[in-house]
Length: 258
Length: 263
Image 1 (cartoon, rainbow over the protein chains, first blue to last red):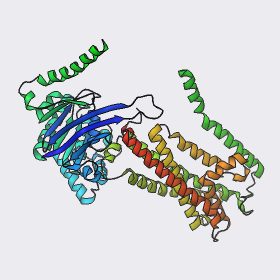
Image 2 (image 1 turned 45 degrees about the horizontal axis):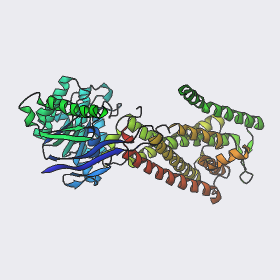
Image 3 (image 1 turned 60 degrees about the vertical axis):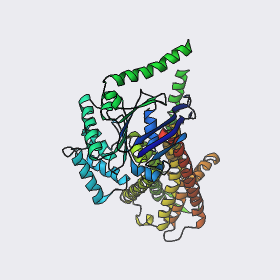
């Protein structure tokens, strides 16, 4: 079953009043589909349009053109979408620093209309799942980046969404913490909770390890989409493919300039 | 060219100081006129006269409401953007308007407690009677004024969203209300040009109602005093809401809401 269906997605950021920056086309006619309970990973260099794609899928910004269906429902139905989608962005911010981890989770649960006993039960479940009991009652400013990432992931799951959108989840983590985080995705989110995941990352090794499908976004265009199995058999191939795609574009530009 | 631009910006950053100089001049003029003798002051409202201490305390107490009403919406959006929480809020079923409303109600409650404290301090420091302030018409005026300033605040928040640098307008409105709203001296002292500014400020009309109620304790305030404030509240609030709504849509369309305020 197709959980996410994207067709002809285009996003143009208009030129803002009093700004010298020109209009920017962040996404050009992007189409893809994500199967239920699979991991679809979007790779690409900085500025490729990965974050814009995830923000559109989360309903944070509207597309300029194109159609998106989430679990068969048109994206314009915001209430249904907000129940189905969980967003995770890697940011050092995003919490009330003066509250404890528990209080932050209670605040975000309330935003999802989850209050009282039901909220407490759900938060307790997530604390156990992500092993956060030792620090959940500390104020947020005492949290390390790894702790924040776990808490952030717990926040994403508060309303039990079917689809998780993870935007560069390991950006602020050291290699060990990043590795732990991917284990967490693989073991808890995929095996236990059986979520559908759309992930954007720069970590090629981890991406090919946990993904079912890999896609490459470059300058707003989806250049290729391949099964991850293809790269798992011959390590190093993914990096070559990545470099080749970027190189090809640069060579084209150089030829045009000459 | 860049240096000129920097110098010009620095020059205009002093606008507040000029305004304060003007403000103190007016205070000195007024104090000189009244001779610091706590006389009764004419309000130009049916030739009513009010005790100076009551006049002063009513003015100061209403300023608390102006501060919170103008800043509450802009501060809510700024806090959410600065803390990076806005993207998490936008994907939940809770709308931003619900958060604005909660923050506004909480702010109104806090500023009413500040207002009450001012009235109590007034009782102990300069002997103004407390019970005079607890009248239905005064509370209705507080509410209408807060609504009108919330409308202005929404307009400013809308500008901050699109232009990023609209926040200082909150201080402009606040200080203009202090200086031109009849807080420390009656508005009839102003020249014609300035009295126009005071007429478009909700605090001027709210103070007229409150001071009338203080003079004629127990009597109902004539509708003609309420009418301008009611119209102003309706106009400012609805237009502020409309502008904010449009601006939020525009900001969402262009991803402005998600941008870091320090970018």
